[in-house]
Image 1 (cartoon, rainbow, N blue to C red):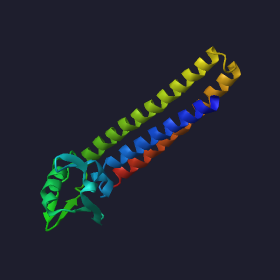
Image 2: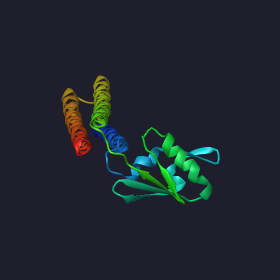
Image 3: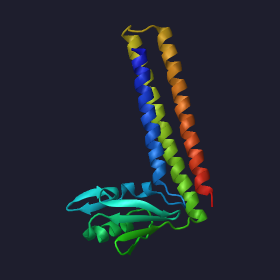
Image 4: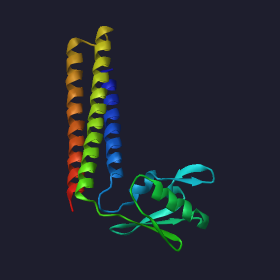
Length: 185
C-alpha cells in the first residue's frame, strides 16, 4: 500500500513537471522554434484545430518559421489565426508559404516574460506540494485504518518529502535555464 501511494505521487509529480516544461516552451525567446505555434487554433471547416494539423510548420532560419498549409484556401485563415494569437507575431504570405519572423525582444518584454515564467514555476511547485499533502493524508488514513504502523507512516512521509524536494529542484533547474535563455541577447 505504501509503495502504491509513493508510486502514484511520483507519477503525478512527474506529470506536473512535464506540464511545467511544456508551458515553458510556449514562452518565446528571440529564437524561432516550431513549438511556438502548437497552440494556435485555425478554423478548419467549422472546427478549431491546431496549425500543425492543417499545415507543415518548419524553420526557415534561426529567426523565421515557415508555415505551408496543405490546402491553398487555408492560407489566409492560418495567417489570420497566427496574427490574432496572443504571441505578438506578424506573419506575411509569400506565395503558398507564410513566413513568421520572430521579433527581437526588448529588455522590458524580457523582464515581463521572466515574471510570467516565475509565476508558472510557482504554480508547478504548488502542484507538487499539493500532491505531497494528498499522499501524506493517504498515509494518515492508512494509519487510522490500522493498515500500516506509525513507523511505516513516518518512513512513507519521509520518502514523499524526498520526492517533493527532487521535483521542486527539477522545476527550479528548468526555471533557471529558461531565465538565462530569456536574458541571452
